Amino acid sequence: MSRTLISGGTIVNATGTNRADVLVDGETIAAILAPDSLLIGKDGAPAVDGVIDATGKYVIPGGIDAHTHMEMPFAGTTASDTFETGTRAAAWGGTTSIVDFVVQTAGQNPLKQYELWHEKAAGNCAVDYGFHQILSDVQDSSLTAMDELINEGVTSFKFFMAYKGVFLSDDGQILRGMQKASDNGALIMMHAENGSVIDVLVQQSIQRGDTAPYFHGVTRPWQAEAEATHRAIMLADLTGAPLYIVHVSAKQAVEQIAVARDNGRNVFAETCPQYLYLSLEEHLGAPGFDGAKWVCSTPLRSRAEGHQEHMWQGLRTNDLQVVSTDHCPFCMKGQKEMGLNDFSKIPNGIGTVEHRMDLLYQGVVMGKISLSRWVELCSTTPARMFGMYGRKGVLQPGADADIVVYDPNGHTSIGINKTHHMNMDHSAWEGFEVDGHVDMVMSRGTVLVDDGQYFGRAGHGQYIKRGLSQYLI
Ligand code: URP
Ligand code: ZN
Ligand code: ZN
Image (cartoon, rainbow, N blue to C red):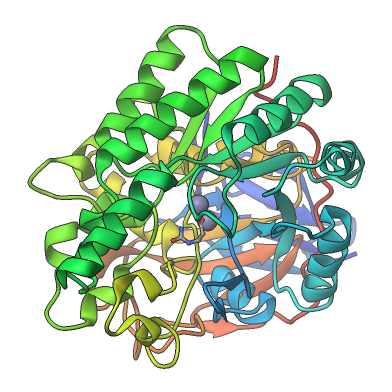
């Protein structure tokens, strides 16, 4: 077993920061040592096989992106990152674990779909991966499958209140799934948008000739998100199931979540970098068809209405607990352009898996969140929320040696011809110049990225059999 010392850095955990060295032995962290420890063997030689100098840098637990869609079939096409390309890009950006969604649409067997996702991922991933399960038509057999999937380490299930005829479950179906979750300890994840209302608004918009990408945002108004968020909270309350709202973008939805939490309900939520930085006006409203790059659901919101600042506030006050990417990339050519004359045909999704750690670090730079909160939002809480904590999400003896050395004095230029390893023909983050740099990335003791060079390999990543959420009571 090889031993590596990461020396001279400042360790950042969710609980605080301290100057210390990290001793990695094989795949795990063996010890957190006093700064500048000299590890000398009996013969006077260094008792480690390698030293990584982290002087002046932060040493943080590897990022966990709890919301990705690698090679997901969607809207008549397939998300352009495979497990191989998407997890390689994740590694480049300091994310050492992803949790991807197994898709079950009407009529499909959830257990068969789960096996299919294993076939897609096994032997292809650069970083460790787990699965959530999407359930659409909730049959008796799906409820039984939920128990079986929990034993397989799939402990969270996503339902959709939108996308009729594809993913949408009606309220009764969602209620049944929640009743099951309140029995077996699963976490219910919710795509909270009122699909029926959106479908009418979309149809009316297309009929009027308002077909440009901008109208994707207009036809998915904040009211549709806030209403569905409230409804999901009420359904969860009826059953006692814990609830995690995904990709929150409307400030009014955050308000619903905050009220629920203040009233003692077991409700949690994530937002994504796109809802912190990008907007309806500047991005969906970009000239010509360019706005298609930013068509995702929930949609980018109006900056004039202040949603983006409200998301930062929610992250600071813990009304929002996690930042994931909802990584669901599509190329412009042949994919997004399917909706050239009709925005409703543009496949929904943005690719961000590579940039989440850097983009959220800007919150530290701008004084919106602390260093520890950065780590908590991007690694520690995802680990706790989705049953991986201890092994993942923290630098402590016994944890997997998933470690990032982050240079606060470094700089990262984001763009298709710069730092871009996602399988996309554009970047939703083109031209972003950010402070900070992912210098070194280690996954279970293996260096994947160091000093701008990639040493990872497809197949290094292993399946994470997750436990139940630590936030359950
Ligand atoms: O636009 C999005 N979010 N695409 C992925 C599917 C989903 O709803 O998460
Ligand atoms: Zn969704
Ligand atoms: Zn998603």
